[in-house]
Image (cartoon, rainbow, N blue to C red; front, side, top):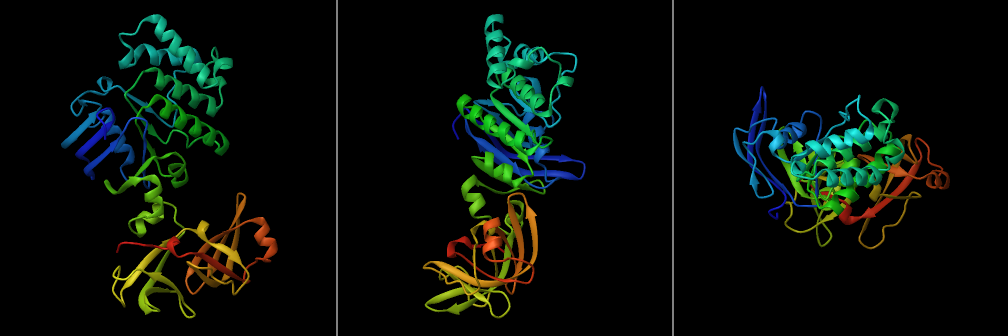
Amino acid sequence: MNSDGLRLTGVALRLGAFALADVSLAADRGEVLVLLGPNGAGKSVLLETVAGFHRPLRGRVEIGVRDVTRLVPEARRVAYVLQNFALFPHLSVAQNVAFGAMHGTGNRASRHGARARRVASLIERFGLGAHADRRPAALSGGEKQRVALARALATDPELFLFDEPFSALDALTRDALRDELASFLREAKLPALYVTHDHAEAQALADRVAIVDGGRIVQLGAAAKVFAAPRNARAARLLGVENVLDGVVRAHAAGSAIEIGAPPAFFVPLDAGRAPIGSKVAVSLRASDLALGPPGIAAMAGEVAFDATVRHVAQQGPLTRLRCDAGVAIVAWATSAQLRALAIAPETRIGMRCPQDAFHLLEG
């Protein structure tokens, strides 16, 4: 990490029966680090600790070149964006944003003209020009969140903290605001810590991901790597992987393979030495990696193919979720075209194939 980002080193904290246990992580300038985990995992507590609302029992919190572990919140130059907007109801949009510019730690020495230009720029940047004189009660949820973002940016922070800021918005507004935020943060080259329990949101926004569970960081890394290779079954579930499959390592062909499902089982080749013959293992498999076809579909080079019986069909947005039985329960996704072409319905047989490397061996 460069010296202009965020660094937590061995941070420990206790709040009643809950504890953060020796948390270490870092975010560089322009990087979005997403804290992903279930409700009650400690994500918001960790965010609040960085903001200065909780003082750790041990460890260090550094923002840029400053050790802020013992500093009060208002001295940390942190912008905190919440789900509930926290706007001043008696102030207009322009006045709410101007409040951030006037009271932000980084702006105390700023001249009035510079503050006014910053406010005007942010109002324009977030498409709020037509609403500048309105009060929050006259705004939609998406417009309120735009004001909250603009006000937070007006404080001229060194770090952004986001606690599920878009979870109360409709999907279309949420996606648009998320894209705008990611673009702005990279332009501004500000580090950001973003809390969510939504794996799809994490995948869309994160440069890096930290999986938080039970007050601990259980996996941390580049977003693409973490989503492709969850450490264990718990992490796989938190990352939205639909299939965690149990199997047994068998001697097979020129090496070994994982036997999955009751007979007729299918086999996933396994690199020699990764697990001993006869051992029980688990693998993760994303439903999006499965290609569907007629029963008896042939595997191409580097693929695994098997048949399954469709047990349940459920429409979810533009795709249909299939719960299938291949000697083991497997979830797959189907398009409308595939439903028609394969005449998919409960109790029909279909073929599935996917790349061998779509199966990821999990730690025990």
